[in-house]
Length: 412
Image (cartoon, rainbow, N blue to C red):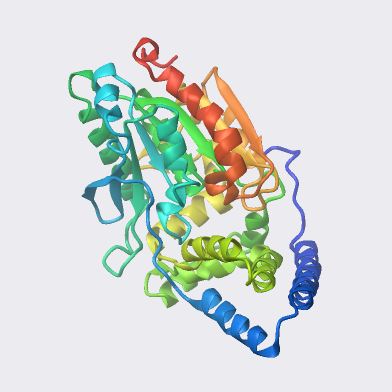
């Protein structure tokens, strides 16, 4: 199935984006400083108190902490590029019931963009893992991507796909007499397009496919990242990207990814930090900032081989939707996917606009597709309260309804 590039895809220019970003940053700075001094006047704080708050603010915004997972689980195994975290026993007694009842297992593929995978289990109150379990999908595991080292800088797309296969094999072998050959795949952002590719290569093993904030058509929906790709390499070459990887010893530094994402919308980061300064007297606000900053500022590197493959074949070539993507001598045919689709996008997602996610619905052989759209941005899809309370639950309940014994026949 070869799909031409959609003519209606919007292409905003990078200069305009930079101008808008500069103006937004200035506005965020003005708003933040105004709120800070308004707060200081309202509270009639002394210069000593202001100095104390400033030093505490400085500590909070520069401290680097290791993020953690929130839901009890076990580590089933660890490979060079990932750990498999098994949450099936997180709800006491439910895993045994699920296994006996024959509920289809679920594999969650988190984002991989230089941050910890635990964004899918951000906190007890904001957890995609918890939402999946609450929907009744109790046989659940998630891959936890491991940061690249000099020993794994050569890990490529085939190793990542093999890791998904190993995880699926583990889940489908763990159900005892009621074991299934198929799984529900749920993929976020990079984990989403990886799930799509794996599903196209192994359609007979996918019961349902759910993606959130995952770019499928990289050139649609006012793509900010694509504008940068074209600006860095207007001739479509790879020299700039190879140079970045070579200078970092064969990896893409997570710190560079963090800086790049901040650079897409610097006003967001300016606003976030200055609003903290204006709310230093609010313990709940400070704790919420600390929780998010723990995840946001901790970074891990990405294998250079994997990163360069993504840039060349997906960001630049957009080969996934063109029907030109080949892996291990096999063409990735999206038309081979027949499992029910569940797609979630963020209306204000500037990293993966909704069109990039929803493009999948027109490219597969599936006859069932459910779309949901949240008002939030990219990260909010995975850990935001709106998405986790309003949008994920109905999607996951629909997946769970299809995953009960009476509904687990071969995918149509």
